[in-house]
Length: 274
Image (cartoon, rainbow, N blue to C red):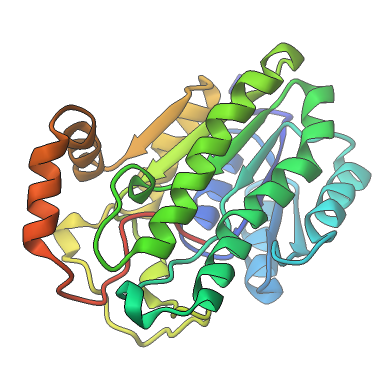
């Protein structure tokens, strides 16, 4: 029997990208799903798809920037399924641009989703996770390890949740709760088609070479295995592992490369997904 059989998993930002792929992979491994995001029609379609496979799935409209929204999603999960075993704080987007072109409001908007959205998810889910001795999954980014030119807002937000995962892991260990940090590199998602205000532009061109982009389904398999084994952190994608290794062991070499490269495009940073 799969480790997630009979378990209930909440995924924020489940309407596309890594979030939707994670929902499918958890369902494939026996879990029932609570799908939370702003785009309810997409969630309803995904919930229907999962139900067709024999899993139970609940679609919940949820904006992680609103106080009380994630608490309501958790309440609906408990009212419907009676338990919560895994909560995935995945909702996020990327604000990009050189520092002098960004306003304080851009940074606030970035942190409201990527940092305070994670905090709201952790706060809402932890009481139920303590009862089930479950797992909190925080989706960070390779950018949380390696800040790059033109991505200061995004990198700052992902460094913040990296720090949160480390602090929180030790605090909840004695409660039997695991904390898994996910640090994706370039994964197939809509993040590079979302502007600095969080608006999705479906016709925007992909800014990352296709050979660097890992399919969301493959990333989801790697992440779910890490959650099953309660790994402290999983770095997704080969290029992500390389740059994190360089940051840890040869930081001056990586810094030289980044400084020489400068800021040459408005491409989205490496990681994260709704």
